Length: 311
Image (cartoon, rainbow, N blue to C red):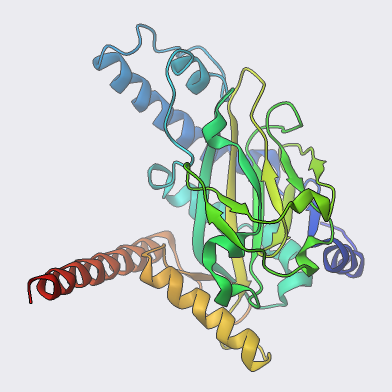
């Protein structure tokens, strides 16, 4: 794959995001799309058994079936992660094209940080429209000096009709905006973001990827098409212990590592450069242990709180 690393670095540094076209051969996305199709099939059978639909819509293509199943009922999902934790996702996270695209921004030692989302944006669903936000608004003030690169991957072609992302160029240079969650759990900035910069739509085709930082304002509007806009977003960092940075940056990046572990996100893994890579089975084992430890901590915290309430 040929591209100009220097130009990519310049664009990303200037705008806070970079679109890289044709990074992933379409065939390499098929295993994950097939897994999605299988899960939608199981979901269809469940709806049929519950009497919520009278047709499985088995003949509809990828992107249309889930929309047909919920044409008369809302699917209360903004993300659908766990059913897709499998070898297909592991292969995509470790895709060589993604790792190559990340190197100009993260260096030669790159790791997946444990955080990913699989997002079905259904037609006319207000629930799956995301207001413009910085990812660090969700992570907290202590994350603002960390450098986390989200790789946003459409699993269908996307445009302004079906809910492509909008990004504000240069917004990664702004401060972390004050914000609070709305009734759907979305972060909404106290300041009028669009008074500071104009969001631009990012149409993309299968195989394209969008890279942006945790400080870059981005969001998406309501899907006005008749199909589901499927996408996944995967987050990457410099592999801890392989680089030098200021104390402030190192503290911010350690905060993020600890936060994801505390919340029981999947185990991080090296995808390029120094460090030991993980097979899917190894990643699964580490992730299950991490999630068990997080549940134990939460249970202990609740028990301690209850004891305190009674004292």
